[in-house]
Amino acid sequence: MEIIKAPAAPAAIGPYSHAIVHNHTVYCSGQIALDPETMEMVGTTVQEQTGQAMKNVKAVLEAAGTSLDKILKATIFLDTMDDFSGMNQVYEEALKGHKPARSAFEVGRLPKGALVEIECIAAVD
Image (cartoon, rainbow, N blue to C red; front, side):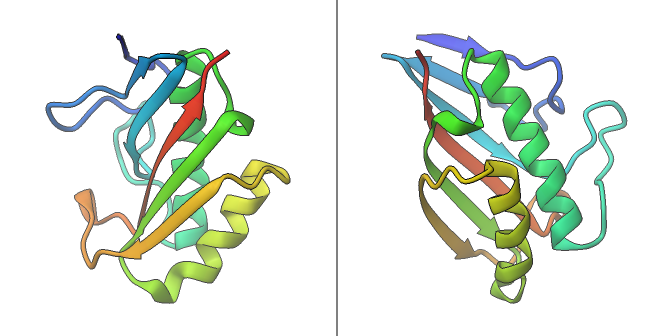
C-alpha cells in the first residue's frame, strides 16, 4: 500500500490522504474546487467548480502514476441535482471521450460550501 500526497493538488482539509494505491489500483479522496495555491474555492457556478475539481483529480492521479483516462469508477456528489447537467458537460469535456462507470448523488451540503465533489478509483499500470 502506498499513500499519495499530490503536490499539485490542494492540501487535505482533514485527516485523510489524497489517495491510496493498492494492487495497481488508486483510490482517490474526493476533490472539491479548491485552488491548490490559495486554498480558496474557485468559481461560483457548478461548471467552474467542476472544472477545478477535475484539475485536482487529475493532479492526484498523476501523483499516483496514472491519468484521467484510467478512471474505472467515479462518484459525483452534488449540492443539488439541479446542477447535474452543468456538471455533466464539464466532466465529459475533461474526460475527452473516456466513459468510466459513475454514480451521482445530491447530498445537500459539501465541505467549504462546494457545489460539487468528485472522487474516483483508477487503474495504475
